[in-house]
Length: 558
Image 1 (cartoon, rainbow, N blue to C red):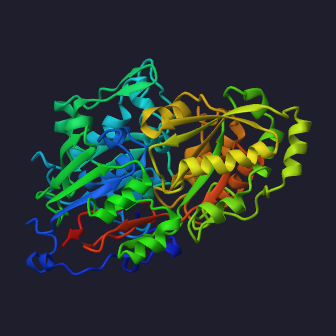
Image 2: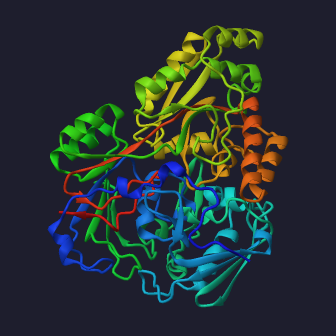
C-alpha cells in the first residue's frame, strides 16, 4: 500500500512560494483573536466579482466565478496548499492508494459537522459519491462537466448517458474511514480529488431541497432550491443570501467549520466591467477584484493597491467547431492550419497581456508534467495561411465567431479586445468574420459548449490540478459540441495516458498525445497568460493561487 499523505508526484516548481504571495498588512484586530478560533474580528470584505454565479451546487458547475464562491462554502477531501498546486489535507487527514490504484482509503477528520448541524462522516462522503454516480436525467448529467470528464460516466439508467464509469462503489467502514472503489485506475488521482465540483455537501440538505432536480427548456437550465438558496457545506463561510437585483452574494462566517473564517462577512459584488471594478476599488466601495487590466498594474501599485501576480497555469485558445455552420470547410486540416498561421500571437501577447505571458505552443502550460516543445508549430505567416485557404477552396469564407461579454477570465482579461485582435488578423488572410457577442452566463457557454452554434470561439482554461489530462483530456478526451470532431485514435491515446502510472511513464504518454493534438489541430492555442488579483491596502492574509483557488478564511480587513 502506497502512503500518499502530503505528497505530490508531479510538483510545480514555479508555484511554491506561498509566503511571497501573501498580503502582509498589520491589523489591530488580529491580536485579539487566536488562530483558527471564531470570533469575527476580521471585519467585512467586499470583493468585486467579474460575473454572476451560475448556481451554488458545485457538482453542476464548471466556471470560475461560481467556484470562487463555492470554495468558501464547501470543503473537498483534499485541497491545494495555499499559493501552490501541492496537496494537503482538508476533510481527509490522510489518504492511501492500493489495489493498483483502484482503491482509495480516506481517513477523515472526526467530529466535523455541516453548517446545518448534521455529521460530516464517512456515510456522508459516500452519499456524495453515490449521488454523483447515480444522478438521473440527461439535463442533470450534461451539467456535471467535471464528473463526466474525471469519472467517465454514470450508472446505466435507462435513457441516460451511462458510459464506462471509473466509479464502482464507496464503503463507510466506520465514521472516519471512507473507502472508494474504482473500476479502473485513474492517473489524475489523488490530485483530482481537490476539484471544487467534488466538494462534500450535506446529504440532508440536498434531499430536503430537491438538490438533484435539473430541468432543461430549450437552451436554458433550471436548478433546484438547494442549488440557488440553500447550499450547505463545512467551509469557513455559509450562505446567507443572493440578491440578484443588486448583484450581491453574501456569506457569513461558519463557526462550526474546521477552518472558520476571521471575517464576519464576505460579500461578492458583481461588477462585469473591469474598469468599473477598478474605479470601485479606488472609491473604497470594494476591497479587491480579480483580473485587473495588465496595463493598470503600475497605476494600481502607485495608488497603494496590492497587485498579486499568479504564475501562468492556464491557456487561452481559439476554438474551432468542425460540426458547426461551416463544418465542411473546418473539417479540412488545411483550413485549421491556415487559421493558426494567420494569427499574430507574438504581437497579441506583447500588446494585450501582462508581462511574463508567453505564446502558447500547445494546450498544456510549460510548468505541467507532460508538456513538450517537440510539437508542430504554426508561426505567424500570412502568405502561407492564404495559400492553404486557396488550396482548400476556402477563400473568402464567412465564419461565425463567438466571444463572451460581461466577464473577465484569468486567461482572457478583456474578451472584446481579444476578439478584435484575432478577428482583424483573420480578415487579413481573407476570412470574413460574423461577430456574435453573448453574455458569459446568459447564453455564451451553453451556445458554444452545449449546442455548438459557432464556427470559432474564444475560451481557455485555468488548471484545476497539476496533471496534463486536466487540460488536454478535458478539452479533447471525447466528442464535444464545442469542437465537433470524432477522432477515436486521439480519444484512445488520451485514455491510455490518463490511465498510465504516475511519473515518467505518465509524462511521456502525455507528451506523445500533445504531438498528436498539434498535428490534428482541433483548436489553436494562443497564449499562456499571467493573471493577477488586486486587493486594497487594508486587506491582510490573502494568498494568490496559480489555480485561482484563493480562500478567504485567512483574510482580515482592518
